[in-house]
Length: 216
Ligand SMILES: CC(C)(COP(=O)(O)OP(=O)(O)OC[C@H]1O[C@@H](n2cnc3c(N)ncnc32)[C@H](O)[C@@H]1OP(=O)(O)O)[C@@H](O)C(=O)NCCC(=O)NCCS
Image (tube, rainbow, N blue to C red; front, side, top):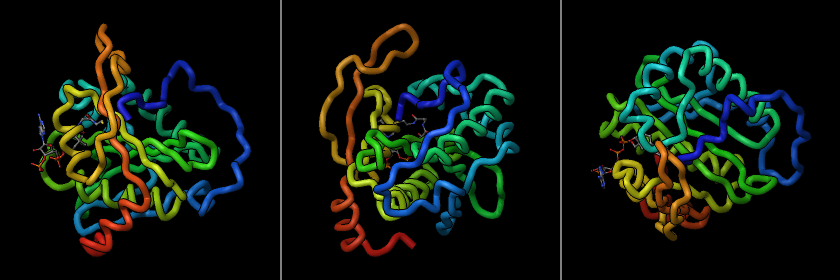
């Protein structure tokens, strides 16, 4: 999700009725805690604003994604927005924490591309101190399983700028299939960048689980 859906300029309060045809509605009233051996995904809290500001506003993290909020206050507004969107049933954002610390070091996002979440898009950003540590892999497995099993996603899309080597490498590693090239589809720093479209289908993910066994 190179284009993070949150835009401070569009941050208006609105109420949207939930759509009917979803597998589980529980996540709309509060996200579950998803635990792996090293990584935990949990609901964002206002108190995560400082650490997310520190982790996600560096040049290396933000280079290929939509500009994150530029202040701690901006992150607080973003976090409040994620809660409203989750309640409206259109979007989910988990904080990533590692080990026994409760500090948010990144996020995994999921948004519907059609009512009811049949097709959805996911995105992620993790503080660079945690790159190459396995945090992405474990967090991604928790997130994708949640998307298919709890939200009822059938087709999960991700877009990564072609120049984003780590983003594309991470998606390939998790088992996403490269479907195509979205020419000049992402405006960043004064130029339009090509993006790769990656997808995972629920049946692919279930087949992978049969081959590799449950994640944890
Ligand atoms: C995307 C992100 C979450 C991935 O986490 P990560 O810890 O860097 O990912 P991993 O190290 O587990 O996996 C990346 C893979 O890409 C590979 N890779 C790194 N640079 C690469 C390049 N230039 N070309 C191809 N593959 C590359 C790595 O070798 C690794 O594969 P391996 O584990 O098999 O060696 C993290 O890099 C990040 O937050 N980036 C900034 C935000 C962002 O770009 N988000 C993605 C939007 S689509």
